[in-house]
Image (tube, rainbow, N blue to C red; front, side, top):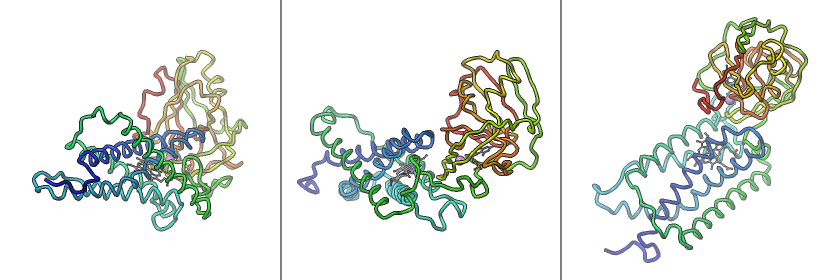
Length: 352
Ligand code: HEM
Ligand SMILES: Nc1nc2c(c(=O)[nH]1)N[C@H]1C(S)=C(S)[C@@H](COP(=O)(O)O)O[C@H]1N2
Ligand SMILES: [Mo]
């Protein structure tokens, strides 16, 4: 039987597919990681790798087109399924990712309720689910030649091409002065810095702004349980920190309240477990667990930009966790509890 093209031996299809799978898995992994990192240095690396892996898929489109054409010639019974859905999901993921990076605003932007980034994440998760199904029925055994000189050269060429594409895209965004030129290392856009009234009110998932908030904060640990009036929490401890939401926006504010190490020391005494954790629990049930040794960098804030917090932003008291993404910044804090369990023994992202 004739091959479709003398320049495309059978193995070329396999290599293309392995390349696509590797890029998709890399994009998925770095995408999730991009949601977890908060500090600019690591975020820049992760986000760059993410963009390059995603854009690199485009380099393999001409080869994949040949693979697809060849597969369509096979009798129907021997054809796989799910390829079209996977192709569409991948294109939607790429398009929404690029729209977000460029900073295109429109009916799909966050200001209308659904950030383009949410569409991107939804399409990305769908793509990853589809690629697992798609590739499972077409499993390939690794071959010795995958790691030979030519195989490595090809992989290196793909990586270099992907990186070049990302650099070119980023350069274009800057040259044209597109809104995306202003985004933070995490990819987030500035909204409401020094102006809490202009800062979006966002919930992680299904949480809602509570109607009743407690007038006291419960502190638990070292065998004690005390209630502190929230009116006593404004001690003038201040920090300027960036709230960076995974929804794609960030705001820098002057936060004021009380440092957590100070508050815990005063009310629970000095006998706290050195390697313990702190559960910060909202009146809504939303919660995060943080390492106790971070307490000196954490603030329970009652004020932003010199004014009491707005109800949507966590009044009367919220956590300020500099260097961490927004989902750590628990709003409407009702209880802070020192526990022995390690902080990493929790879902990496809130489940509520
Ligand atoms: C197969 C899955 C995915 C692909 C192919 C993909 C691809 C892309 C592409 C091409 C961009 C634009 C990069 C640029 O132009 O600089 C992008 C941006 C982004 N993606 Fe994904 N993505 C995927 C999944 C995800 C997931 C699961 C998440 C988060 C959980 C995510 C988070 C982000 C973020 C935060 C940005 C903005 C980065 C920036 O502004 O440069 N992605 N993605
Ligand atoms: N109780 C509670 N706190 C929460 C959330 C939530 O859903 N419930 N969302 C978090 C997320 S994802 C972000 S980005 C910030 C948003 O804070 P803001 O609404 O003040 O802008 O709050 C965090 N604290
Ligand atoms: Mo968020």
